[in-house]
Length: 424
Image (tube, rainbow, N blue to C red; front, side, top):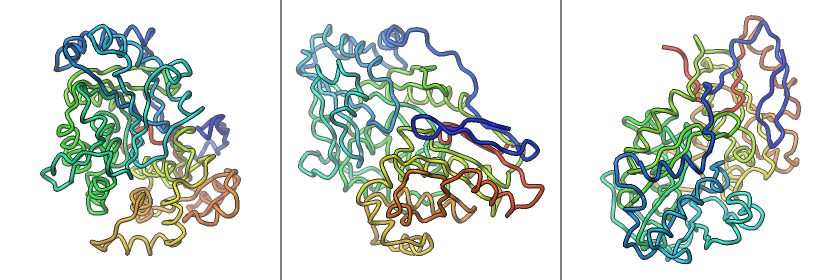
């Protein structure tokens, strides 16, 4: 049986023995919104849990709109024009509206990448800036959360009169779901906040996983930091497999997010009747699989449905390599995941981008993980802490041989965009 999985910009066609296939897990069908700008206008006028944006903006002198970076396929070119028009009509001059890219610790989005993020027209006509987590002077200290996280938030967001966030709700490997509060934390916070928010002990919590909000300390801390920064209005979208907008949730930070999560959970959840021996997964293609660092999200997405001792095959293009210099240095220093797992036990240990390696280590306790990739150069390939195959069929053959003639395979073509679970 042939099926197509997300890989880079063009995808990858794979073939599996039909008798071994347990299931292909997908998002549930949902009707795309016919006119996203018009739907956005309605959402701004009839928000969830707060006054219309027009009323909220009236009398404000300036506004900061925080948006996701290039790793999230948010359709900003469709969403931002109605927001901008509403703000201008409410009396905020266009030149006093800042678009702030919530990069977290990712690289800045500039040039062609900025045009891809906003569209050429908006990129060339708006005041746009990138958050820089390593610039301590660019942040304001707002106090500590009840969990002890020091909240250092981008000064340009905090000091604006009106605070708006625009995000995407999807399953998230640590915070349960992305979007909402995560645009602020980690999107707009300093390294010092990240040291706590992505600390090893917080991520080791059993509730810090996809699809879980209740009891999740990552979700809790992010909400508290976002509250401290004051989000006046939030807009989040849900996307289908073709990245069409199928849901729009605008309004008060937490109320609109909760409604969005309820919708997304029903839309993205798919199940298998029992754990399988082999799971084929992806990191949903470009832009999420542009680096090995981001691609690890596809591994955690598969971890709930693989048998103990099973195999996860991750297909990821990694067109931009392994990830940041900090992440590469971490891989170079701790080539063996077991060595890295030991160092995570040290209370004084902290390294930028350690969290994604920790997530991989968590899965490796349960199952074998291999990478299918045909683009990484030899010097980067040798730093990947799991086996790397250039050919998918070879990786599948080895996995099936390892688990025997009765081994069953599940496929998640869109990786982390699907909430894969074993049916209760």
